[in-house]
Image 1 (cartoon, helix red, strand yellow):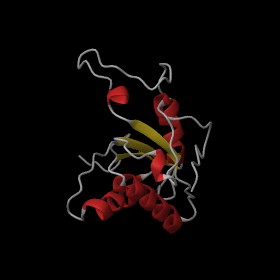
Image 2: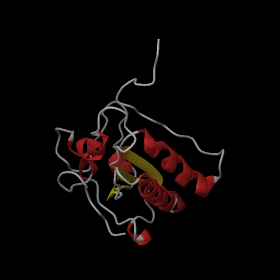
Image 3: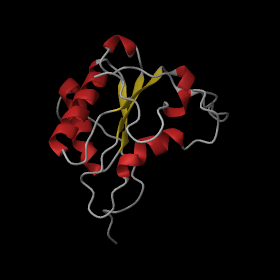
Image 4: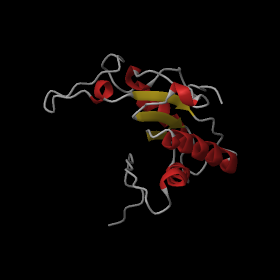
Length: 158
C-alpha cells in the first residue's frame, strides 16, 4: 500500500509535517507519532460527511503549514521536538465496512509495531474498534489507552 494521500480533497500533510509511506516501514522508522486519516462514515445514523474529517482537520489551521507550532507558554514545539509524520489516508469505502476496518486496523498495527504512536483522524465512531485493536495486537489486549475527541455529544443524554 503506497501513500494513498487524501481520499477527499487535496493531498497535503497535517500542518506540513513530512509524509511517509505506510507500506514502507523504513519511511517511518524512528517516528514518534504517525498521523493517519480514516475517511469513513459508513456507520453514521443520519447524516454522512464524517469521511471528510481527515481532510478538514489537515487544512483547518490558518497558520502556514510549515511543520511547526511552538507553544510560548510551554516553551516547546511538539512538531519539531518529536518526529511527527503523516501517512495519508487509509483507503476506506463507506459501502464496505469489513474491508475498511480491516485496512485501518492493519495500518494502525503497522504504526504501533514500529514503536510510534498512531494518531487517527476520523471518520465516524466505527473507526474506534480497528484503532484500538491495531494497537492492542502490538501491546496486548487490556493494555491499551485511547484518547478520543468527538465533535459533539451525540451519545450524551441529560
